[in-house]
Length: 439
Ligand code: GLU
Image (tube, rainbow, N blue to C red; front, side, top):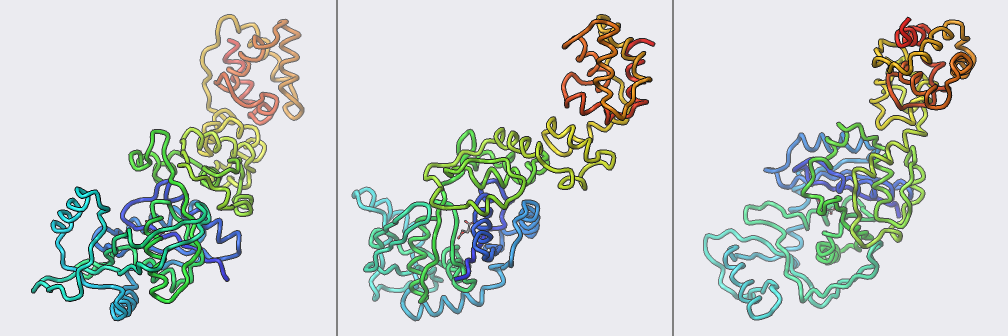
C-alpha cells in the first residue's frame, strides 16, 4: 500500500493555525512512509470559493515547507461525481426528497418534544411526489450494517446507523454537499489515510457506508482533537492566528511546524531547525484526546530558541550582506525574529548615536577613549579595553561594563561584549568612546 494523504481545504477563507496543523500531520505521515501528500481544493461551492484563497493556501504550504505531490480541484471533477451519483441512485442508495426546510424543522421539533431523537424519517416508497418541485437527494444508510472503525487517535469507534439521519448529499439546484464528493475523491486518488479534525467524526461514520456503497474499503482514519486558542475556541481569534498575520510578525515557519507537530501529543515540543525529527517521530497513537492549546507566546519563545541554533547559511539570504557568519552567531541569542538582525547593523558599522553618558561614568569612558586607539582589534579587544580601563580607574563589575556597553552599542543589553566588540568597526568604536568620554 502506498501511503497517500490529502489536505482538503475549502478556499473560502485563509488558513489559520488549526488548518495548518491538519495539513502538517497529513504531510508528516506521508513523508514518514515515503508516500504522497496531495492538496485537494474543495471548491464545490463556486459562489464562496475564491481564487485568491487558493493562491494563498498554496503559498502558505510552500512557506511552511509542506511540499505537495499533486493538486486536485473538486470543481474540475463534477462529471465524475455525476457518474457515481447515478450509480448510487440506480442501486437505491441515494433517493429524492421533497421536504422544505420548514417542514423538516417542524418534524424535528415534534420528535424532540416527544423525547425522541430528531432523526430524519424516510417516506414510504409510494409516497406522493409533489409536482413541479425539484428534489434534493439523500444517501440511504444501511440500517443493518453497524459502523465501526479503529481510529488511529481515538481507538475503536462504533455508530448505530438506525440512530442517524440519512444525510443530504446534493441540493435541489444540483450542487454538491461535502460528504459524497469527498468519498469519491478519496477512492479515485487512492487515499490511504484520512487525517482531519474530530469535528468530522460523525461525517466519517456516514462516509464509511458511502465507501461500501461504492464498492471500496474505507481508508484509515485519524481524527485529531481540536486546537483551541489561549482564550478558548480558535474561530474567535482567527485574525492573529491566521497565516498572513503570523508571517507578518516574522514567525519562522519551522517554529510553527515544530509547535504544531507536537502540540497536544505526549511528545515534547522541541526547538528543531528542520522537520526531519518530526517526520521520524509522528505517531497518532501519541496524540491526546483533549483539545490542544495554541499559545502565541509559546510560539514566540520557541521561535527564539530555534533562532539561537539556526546556522547563518539557513538565513543568509534574508540577512543584510554585512551580517556575516560571526556577526550572526554573536547576535542570534538576542533576536526574536530574523528581521531584527538588521537592527544591529548600525551597532556594527554605524551610524550610531549612543545616549549621553551619565556624569558618574565619565571617568570610565574617558579612560576607554584614551585606551581604545592603541588596542589590537584582531585579538580580544574587549579584555584589552576593560583591562586598561580597570587599571586606569579602578572601576570593576557593572560600573565598568555597563557604561562601555552603552557607549559602544547604545543598548543596556545584548550579546556577550567579548564576542561582539571585535565585530564592531574599530574606527566606529573609537569614535563612540571618544564622544561618550567627552574628548
Ligand atoms: N473540505 C473539508 C473541510 O475543510 C475537508 C474535510 C476532509 O478532510 O475530508 O472540512
